Length: 49
Image 1: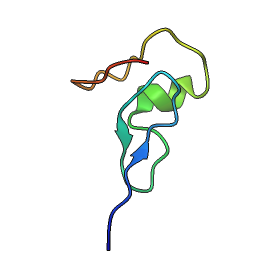
Image 2: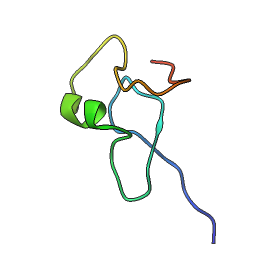
Image 3: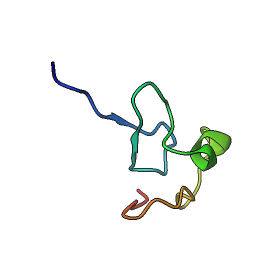
Image 4: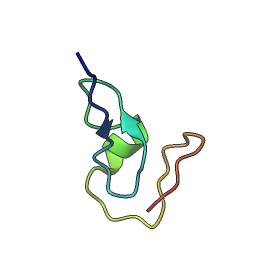
């Protein structure tokens, strides 16, 4: 069985969300669908769109 990687639903974030979650972090979940210039999740390697 292959595992699908789901992108965090926050528009400015490029991180993968954990299995069964919509967001990669609480910061992204709190931001929701807000349009931001950069992601504030704090994960290393996250390059905002």
